[in-house]
Length: 506
Image (cartoon, rainbow, N blue to C red; front, side, top):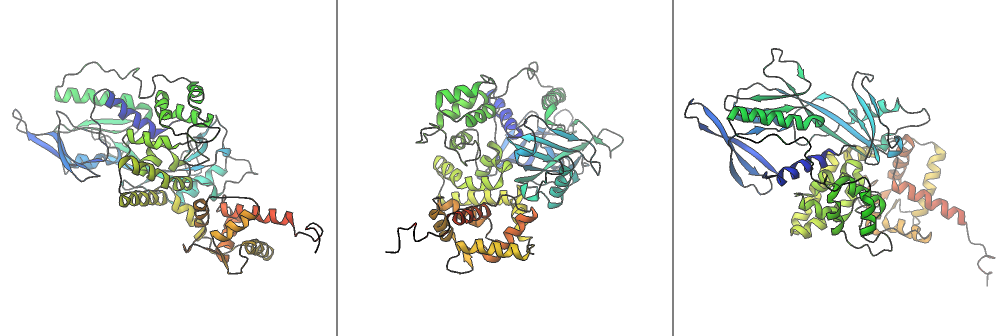
């Protein structure tokens, strides 16, 4: 299974190991040029850059500048030559993640001809199921947003491949995102409208080398071809290419059974150890060394960020060593929590910000900014908005009379004072009466999921709206609905305490 963010980082770390200067959160302001003494033409000789975090600008001088900016290819080309024709045709592709039980562990499905001619795939990924994709023209942006129409298209196609007794519901979508494919046309081709299915390397009159298009499976070949072109165009000297057989960061020391040593040597949970081994390879031991003691009998070390995923707090500290600068980096580009379950990622954010804040000496203001920025990222770019809107859009309560009576009865078991709403105090009181104990912060999060008015309480209409959404399949895993149902069943099983049982009426 391909972890693209991890592979991207491994390539950057490997480049640094071999002498490259690596900088993230850095953007090009404009290209630097000088007049060539022989030809009299201007040649690109570097770039004016800006540190996005601090705002500081600086110059980077270079014998050759290579433009490898994906969907932003044309913006760099126009810095070189303003009137140059675009070669990039950006296309948006939406993907969704649904529970892992929808796909076998070691089997995927690919259909190259869907109902409207697009490709659909359905694959196990990080113990979940990933499904996609769509293909539609889009504007280039650093913050693409998944559309509800695209999410529903994927769900509709996925339903065609499953048994009729299995229903994939809208509420099963745990995360959704949109990526931009940098499809390109060959500037040297007579047919300027045809899309290049692989990649292209072009060199401008000023010497800017551009590599565009391509895919993960051919990235080494693309890099070799690009450098060969750069060396030839700028008369550079270089050793023989050594990409063949070169191991990326973490490959050294990895074996299929490495996770067993992590369990034995550090006392990590098996699932956590397997995750660390498959994600960090030989570097997993560095992460394990940073893991804190849990204070439990087992596991000995490795506190999870959220209970249902194998990501541990030590990974946040290790992410900082791997150039993570923001909380978004951690949930999206170092771990994949934001791509697997936006709700779980949202719950992990306060602790992630706390760990990063302590390590990086963030002020309270900075911590608040990071938390808000990460929540905004999850809400808009990772499908949390679409997920939460399934409740707000279900304004019509689609319940019959008997269902309304049943759910009102359930609600009033918590709303003892007949206020018309329930708070965390009400829920806590009932849960404690049946020996169920939930952390107060977790309880606030559970209520907040369905608190449409955001007033700290769930009103009877909001609760009926929630149950209607559950019935329609718009929401499949509301923790509040499950808690209230469990509590009601437990209380009903107990029944009233009789006089005999209580020891008489003395």
